[in-house]
Amino acid sequence: MSEIITKIQNTVDKYDMLTYGDTVAVGVSGGADSMLLLNYLLSVRDKYKLKLIVCNVEHGIRGEESLRDSEFVKAFCKDNDLDFRFLEINAPKEAQEQKMGVEEYSREKRYEFFSSVGADKIAVAHSLSDSVETMLFRVARGTSIKGLGGIPAVRDKIIRPLIELNKDEIRAYCDTNGIKYVTDSTNADNAYSRNRLRNVVIPELQKLNPSFEKAALRLMQSSAEDELFIQSYAKKLYNSASSDKGVSISDLKSCDTAVLKRIVLLILEPYGVTIDELHLSEAVNLFNNSGRLQIKGDLFLISGGGYLRAARLDGGTSAHTLSTRIIDIKDFKSLTFDYDAFCDCDKLCGAAYIRYRQEGDTVSPIGRNCTKTLKKLFNELKIPSETRDNIPLICDDKGIIAIPDITVDERVKLTDNTKSVILFRINTED
Image 1: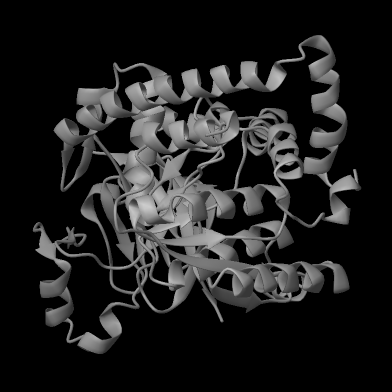
Image 2: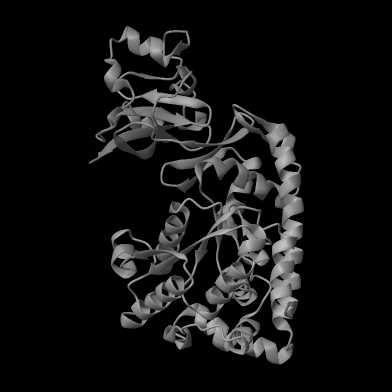
C-alpha cells in the first residue's frame, strides 16, 4: 500500500468513517481530489462491502467546461459499473431568486442532493489545503476557537477521508498512478477570495515555513480538541441549569465568558440558528442585565425574572410593530398624538415589545384589584376564539403591560408620583 493510501486509511480508521455494509454517496466533481477519493473507495469497496453512489452536480456557472466535467464523471462511472446520479442547477439565477450568495446556495443544493439518495454516509473530497483555506478565511473575517478548527473530518453523516492530505500530495499521487482528472480553469482567477488565499497568501506563508500546512493542521487539531472540551463542560452546566422557564442566570452568571457563549449557542440550537462573535458578546451581557436581543426575524433572546431564554415574539398570523413616544406627565392631558395605550415610563422593566398570547399569560386589569388569565379575560369580553391569537400584546420583561383598547396592567399604571408617560402606537404591516 502506498504512503498516500496509507495516510487516507489512517484517517478513515482514526475517525471511524466507514462501517461494514455502508451505502456511500460520493460527491465527485471530476477534479483530482474527488477522483482520488473515488478511487480509494473503489479500492476498499470489497473490504467494507460498500455500495457506492456517485453524485455529480453541474452548477450552471462554467458553461461548456462544467458540462465537460460532468460527462467525464459519467463516463468513468459507466466504465466502472458505478451508480451515477446527476443534478443540474442554475446556481447564479436560483441564488439571486433566493437572495443568497452563489457559493452558499450551491453548497446547500449539493448537500440536499447528496442526502436525497438515501446513503448511510456522504463522502466528500475536502483536503487539508481546503481546511487551511477555510481557517484562514475565517481568521480574516473574525472567528472563535471553533472556527480555528477548520473543516471537521466527520460531521453527522459526512466523512472526509482526504482531510489530512494537501493538494500537492493529491495531484502528485494522481499523476504518478494514472488517475485521470479534470481541471477547473476558474481556480486560477484570484478575483475569488478563496483562490487569492490559495494562490497568493498561502505561498507567502510557505516561504516563512515550507511545512506551513502541516503546522496549520496541528493548530486546527489542537483548537478542535479545546473546543470539544469547553463545549462538553458547557453542555453539562446548561443541562443542570435548564427548566421550562429557560436557563437559571444565578446558576451560570459566575461562569467564564467562554462558557457563557457556548451556553447561549445551546439555547439557540433548537431554533437552528447561530450568531457571530459580535452578537454573541452582546448576548452574554444578558446574564447581567435584563432585556432582550433580536437574533433573527422574530427570534429573540430574553433575560428577565432570573432566566435567559429564546422565544419567538410574534406568534400570531398578523404582523404588528410598536412605536413609542415618551412625554412629561404635565403634557399628558393636552395630547394631540394618536396612541393605543400608555403607562408610567419608569415602571417598565426592560424594553417594551409586541408579542401574541402564550399559554399561561396573565394580566392585572387596572382598577379591578385582581389577576386574570388572558383566556378568562377574553371569555368575559366575548372575544371570538378565532381572533385571539392575532391580538397584539404590549409587554416588557415582567409580562404584559397593556392590551390595546382593553386594559393596562395595574403595575404600570399612572399615579400621583408619575413623572413621565410612555405612549404606544400599534402599526399593522400588510
